[in-house]
Length: 236
Image (tube, rainbow, N blue to C red; front, side):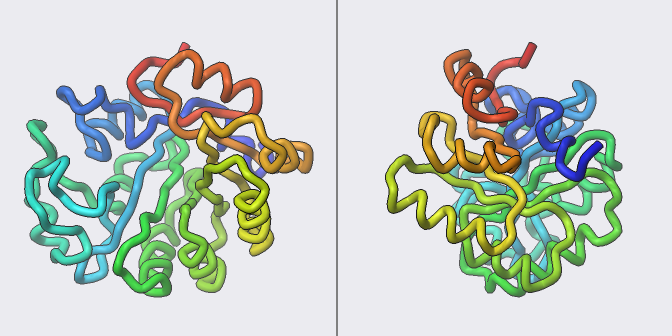
């Protein structure tokens, strides 16, 4: 298997294989365990706590998922450990918990979220967290500053740009970002097809999409990209 063949080998469960926050909530261990049990790759999001722990969480604040206005970046990890997500019997996990549970059984595609955290501190913390992990794992972000920090910190895993857009100015900016030495792209499916993504695929760069929630999105993905990040349905 080539270095990145695993990235496109199977559908990628967006924030884990949750049920749209019915009984199994996004970015929680039950969602990740369900993805592993069904042999789907896992996409998740990470932020840095006030005391430098890597936390699995998407939103800028805890309001939507936890009913409180705090942010991950303002809380210590010990407090975050106790915060319940939605109506589920699950709390906000640390990245190390996900790594220990996955143990290389399915690929992990991890997105660094922008926030008030210093990019160099964030990059260093993430690299330290994953340094002994031997399973297939990639990091990605919308944030060029975070991607550059990961490169400068010596990240050895594949790095990708999370992206969207369909105009020439946006494509030029994406090409400049790719030039720092990125390995793949995760692109918004509804901005496909486009010349930027077509050029990447012609050059052998893997392209995954975000986020397929219906048959139309699935069809667009497999016409113009290599694999989908999905939620809300079960891929055939």
